[in-house]
Image (cartoon, rainbow, N blue to C red; front, side, top):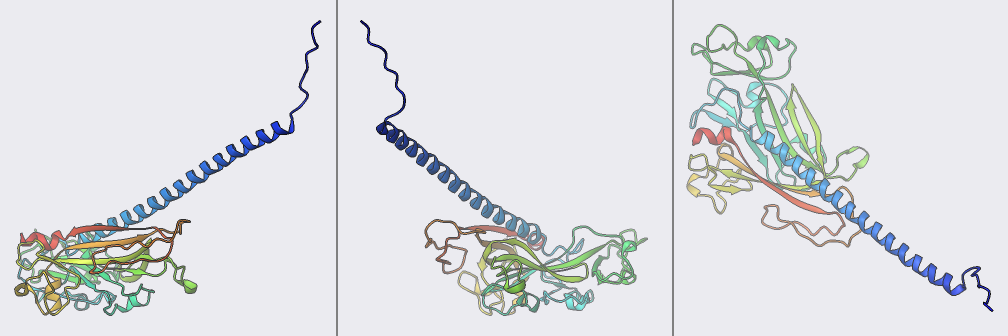
Length: 346
């Protein structure tokens, strides 16, 4: 006789425990995988954010610094005329205050700066600058000229007009009043175009929004005199430190002979020829043909990783850091030539 088939009507306790254990291990594995993917995604987002902030900051510097010393269709030539150091905070619109004098052929220096520890211009000192802030000031006209007839009588923007007519008495004029812009075109039968003048000073602030004590986000900002007004704007947050090295052409061939932190020093620093150095700061500033820009960019948020003890080389004699926090950082550097200064020397 065949025995009746036995049907299982449930699971034993041991089987249940084994199943739950296997499920728990699988769940732990899934959670670990999700956590790892999430952490990797966060690191990638942080790195991408830093890279983009550094890239955009360098883009801004390249766009502006490379056009430093652009004064429309005018350049006096090497050894002709004088250059003037002017207050980057001046918003008077007056030619003399901005460094222009057509009678003695004076122009403002294309670039100048403030080295770490030196006094800051008033308009920057009032904007919560970082400790030992460095400043880079760029002077030029806008690349797009306008017809004098299109300048309003109430205009407050200083315009630079270049004489293309050989019969004009002055080589150039700078004025806010279009009636005073009387220089003519090459055919001497109509007013020459005019170029709006601007001055831009880059610096670092301890905050992007500095109201109510500030938000604690280090930010690249500029103080710009343009369109007749002086304004301060935030450009890129997360830029924590910034250093400039200035390449000076001391031999007149258009190439940098040495790089220095401060061209305003009375004596030539190591690496620069004593014979070509001037004790007059403006004479050294007018010889700047290239600038090395070093930026230390910090992530917007802290990570969950251990406190890092990294140090960073941004071109100074000593490395910066460690910072004893969990913010990720990276250095971005670039060399920017000044064609409007170097070109005529070549």
